[in-house]
Length: 63
Image (cartoon, rainbow, N blue to C red; front, side):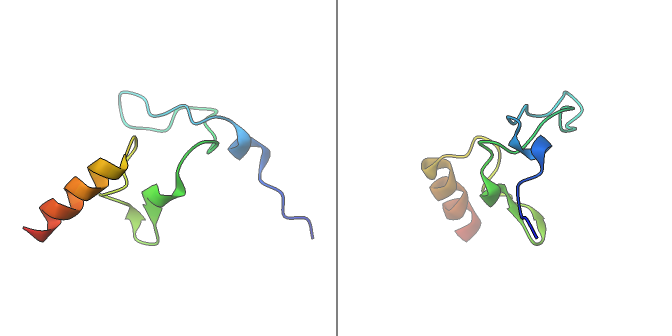
């Protein structure tokens, strides 16, 4: 069985609209999969995360 990536997922990530819905035609190219966990969207690895933002979120969680 071939295990290729679904064609639409090869499209660039177009982001979300003003209502927070994923833009039509959006794929996952260049999207970091760390944003999603088995329990849903990560509160630490959000869209646009950086190593510094992760450190900041982890420090906030310790408080």
